[in-house]
Length: 113
Image (cartoon, rainbow, N blue to C red; front, side):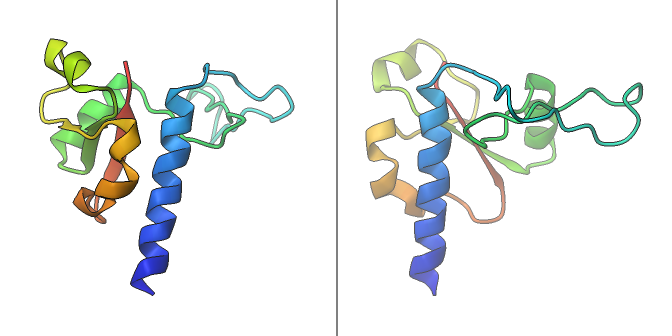
């Protein structure tokens, strides 16, 4: 059973990383999701790849609440030039082998730029 959970985590990470390598295209055939009153909350766009995007403010809130684990999927030289404080460097080609380093109780946020 634990293998299935790990496999699901690896698939989730692979999807997130794939989004990092694609252009940010909204699915024109998918409607925007609106939770509640349109005036009260901004619309959340459904993306073709199904990967949730978050804003800088949302990430800052998650980090402040210790609910995010930030993974930088670039290479070492790019990481050394600058990165989000506290981010863990796991280059894209190493994610599958290092999935055990990811927590199960936090939102995993990947970024590549």
